[in-house]
Amino acid sequence: MFKDSSAFSGYSVDDIDAAKAFYGDTLGLKVTENPAGLGLELATGGKVFLYPKHGHQPATFTVLNFPVDDLDAAVDSLTGKGVAMERYDGFEQDGRGVAAPAPGPRIAWFKDPAGNILSVMQG
Image (tube, rainbow, N blue to C red; front, top):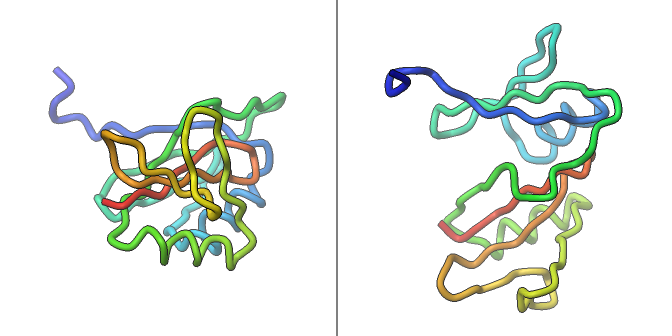
């Protein structure tokens, strides 16, 4: 029934202007505006919809993962733009916030301005 649907993900933010600047300028994604919120276009052709929500509560789990070829360069680029890497109990992370869980890819987490959790991982 849904195998041919153009499904997309969505999550809330508390400040559309801050989200637009972060996702567009800091992360370099294509961002489109519409009356209901923001659309993000991903390299895979996937789309994410960000919508303003009064009383927004940030997601407590990773809402968007960015696989990259060079995790160290991606973390350096993000931190160079003022993005802080998150630290979590239960994960051994190096001084830059990079974890290498086994099994699993090398990964580092960060938050958008609304506090939603994103990750960059060695793809």
